[in-house]
Image 1 (cartoon, helix red, strand yellow):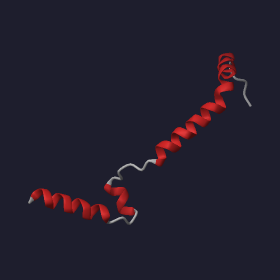
Image 2 (cartoon, helix red, strand yellow):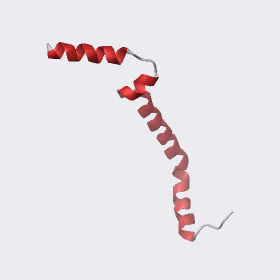
Image 3 (cartoon, helix red, strand yellow):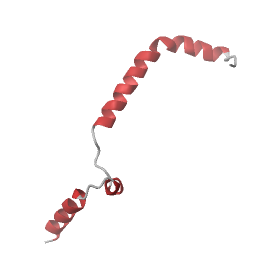
Length: 66
């Protein structure tokens, strides 16, 4: 291992008590963001075998064009 410079040790001393709660908050935030499924772009849907998006789009566009 290498010896950390004193300013790094000082920062670590200050932040150490908050490391675990910040980690938990980070994980919860990530989980909440990952949970709500965004509108998938066509190139993702293509590989997941979900043909529904094509039909919906087609129906919408034909209805609009008439």
